[in-house]
Image (cartoon, rainbow over all chains, first blue to last red; front, side, top):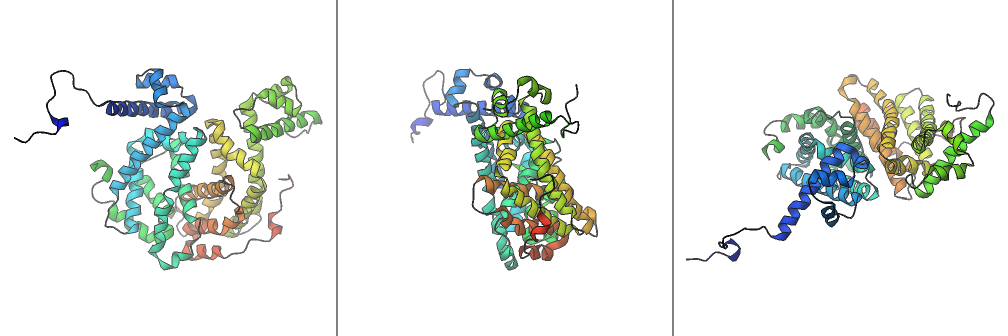
Amino acid sequence: MVSLPEHLQAKPAGRHRLAPEVRAEHQRERVLDAAISVFAERGYQGTTIDNIVAAAKVGVGTFYELFDNKPDCFVQAYERIVVDARERILVAIPAEAGWPEQACAALRALLELIEVEPVRAKVALVEVQTAGPEALTRHEETVDSVIPLLARGRAQNPALAELPSHLEEAIVGGLAWLLQQRLAQGEFEGVEAHLPDVLEIAVAPYIGREAVASLIAATGQGDSSMAAA
Amino acid sequence: MAPPARVASNGRPEQAGERQRIVAAMVELVAEQGYKATTVKQLLQRAGVKRADFRRLFSGKRACFLEAYEEMSERFASRVFTAFEAEKEWRAGLRVAAYAAARWVGEHPREVRYATIETMAAGAFAVERREATLRRFVELLDAGREQLDEPDSVSRAMAEGIVGGILGMLTKNLRQEVRARPEDFVPELMFLAIRPYLGHEAAREELSMPPPREAGLEPTTEGT
């Protein structure tokens, strides 16, 4: 009989425990998720550490094991949201498609994420602005990380080689502002309401308006990638 | 008792002077140490004003911060809108306005910092005020829809996205202390701004359009 590896073998009767590092990571995620809810509800400045630990049902000591202070907690919460969002958006991008379809899929996935995770969206797009310099720096980095992905659109059309160099900076900045405004005003109305504008701002400079209209028609069919996830 | 008029039309120069000194002190102190570290006591000392006089003019630190912000943003907006309105055509007006905005931004790095970094550091109350200001500029751009055969074919969100992008770019590059002048970005920003309303060809023309003559860009009589 083949013997099982040690970690799969039956252990003696008694409490089976998760490895300490796994338990610690679960706890960190739970506290971050609670912090995210509180930041969204009370705003960054209206949130206290007491609010967070009460929502997370942990002691203050636990908070300080995980985070240096409130700004640090926010930055970690922000990173959690962004890392997760990146994964979910990447999954939605069709590997074999051309740039226009990929850009459309990514932007659609972003809007879907905002639609299904409004609390996280508010923290990552609105609250981040007033959460201190480190949070702001991370946010600028995140927004700017989209620039190279957009810039690939220039290869779509040789006539576009002369497009100004800061085009992508202005596009991502404008998109971030638009989404932030909608969320801050409570006026985010869903994927279908905002996708045409988002594509007009981000994709039409590269491929033109008619091509964008075709894209929307084509990729609107089929399963929503977020719903299927 | 109603607060005194902003302009001392009632001939009480020391009140107008006090308001200006306090506002100037706020801008200076925030530039030196940020909003949070700035106290009313420091404001009083810097402005040479008594607390009772401060209280007569402002309900507190927050109100004073907002007042200073409103004044500088009004000066900026005035410069931009004046430039826009001097032209008959929307496109030309937009170009002149964009250069006016870029030049103001280049000439007033402290105010730009106040309106961006310091506003965010101050908190949501200040950010909301700033967003309301930026929405005024959306009107300028959104007027481009009248250029279209079908004005409803472009949404107002387009204008918002463009304004957000433009102002973000002008101020971001300043914040990062990059050596480029904001005016150098205007052709690119005009490309982005014009494209949804006048099409790709017209947008491309903007890339090689020279800056307007200085005559169109003098500061308003209110000063900068």
